[in-house]
Length: 539
Image (cartoon, rainbow, N blue to C red; front, side, top):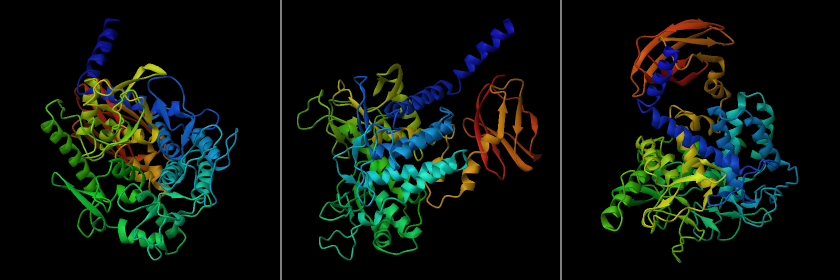
């Protein structure tokens, strides 16, 4: 009994060392953040409401086609994390409702396939515009699901529904033909499509902004049809090279922008990172030697510089180093200053009067910014922007708050804006990994990539926690394979490495060197793919 108590105490001690408490806290925040989408989901239709209340436990009936796309990606993350066991069924229900309807829900679409921006999550009825970018976000989520679940048991059913949806929108009508545009909107895209399915009028946007998603889908649709038209000309003329795009400078950083050189909200850079493979993988090689990731780094640095400059210029406030990042979400109406009034705010450089911090924007930079993880934890530990979820007050997450008006509380979480918080944390090595999005947001997706990503289904690791410096690996490969086994510590230093051959239906007991109590990462590579798994060692 004494020996058992000793080991329990030692285990607790190890969990509280080597950054373990921070890791556990972040995991809790991560899981709680996904629960927002669980709450948003209608149990009868699989449609997600556009936002949730933080000050009441009441649901909101309106959905957004974009939030349905973002929510589908969060389901993939939840499945990857092992939080849910019915991910495929959830996806099938959502895709079915939005393709053929059911349970009283009928999707409201125009003749060229575009959905209403907002509509009832229970009936599908809506009166809003047929927004091109919101449809692009949705279809990006559909494609992500098709790719992610391609090696799962219900892959065929998901692929059939996904393909039906992906082929149901004519993206060419969203493109303003540069040869037939009398309003000097060269490079233009329609913000919305008419009720009759056409795109006409002056409701047009120009590069650069989040409508790169629309341009990308239109371009790829033309490519898949082996045709050349306005979409390819638009892409080649503008988006194919960042050198073609307008820039504005802040604090020495060039930032992609629109023709009038206004600063853009940061979701215009982050959303394409997660949903557009061309953007995700474009780190350089353009004619100016600077790809999209270079400019994503620039807007991040410019944002931090704005908060530092604001701290210097305004002696009525104090801004901590971990307080930064601007984007969209619940805010304060600048016309009234009423802190109790609900208002949707799109904050940007030189246009953030209440100095609102957006934690979801901090998290979304995690793939390119190592300090984002520590900044999120600092916000949480210092009770900055920490909210209890009204349907379960034991669960907390971080969301927008004002440095200028510290008593203000965000009344709602908008699902589209909040999703990058979940996405960003997912890219950490200890969760879904840094390649998660660029693997599944690719149009030219190869099923073999999914097999590689799901090697974990063929390998069992036990025990975990590890005692006595021994670990068992159970392999269940279809064919014999050579495997490379490596263990690294929390700072990335290799502490164990071995090559094993052959492996098929083996159980291997691996003798490890003397390892200190703490967290490690096990990495197993084979021709099928690789597995990364967190280990706890107790010695």
